[in-house]
Image (cartoon, rainbow, N blue to C red):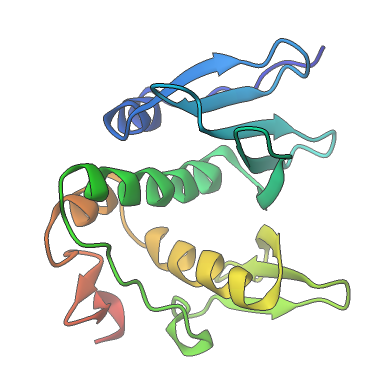
Length: 179
């Protein structure tokens, strides 16, 4: 069995606020975040041999579906902050944040690049790949908001999900840093 990836206390608290619990999958050693009660939705975090982290999602009775591969725990946790932020908004009776996801909405200096094998890569401002996912529309919906999430501190991003209009992440329906 491999060592289970460790998540920060801050993201675990955020997950609990969204109604998720943490355990370790005994068969694979993956870190498992499951919806409580019942475990209807499960997120698995696995460490690859190259150091990248893989995030998959499964519904009860379904197979794991790749959400993304992240180059670092920080990037993975920002992606999870968005996943759980949406769930928290639902639990609080708030409308979903409408995060723009067009190619022109990627964070300044960052790039979303399609590959021949239907993989899409998010490169940071230095040109380094930090996230990989699959499928053109799905990729843009994951990677463009994530590029903007990473412009904020974790506290600012969480505050955005708790604010009705999404500030400081959003302003007037656009990413605040683009205005």
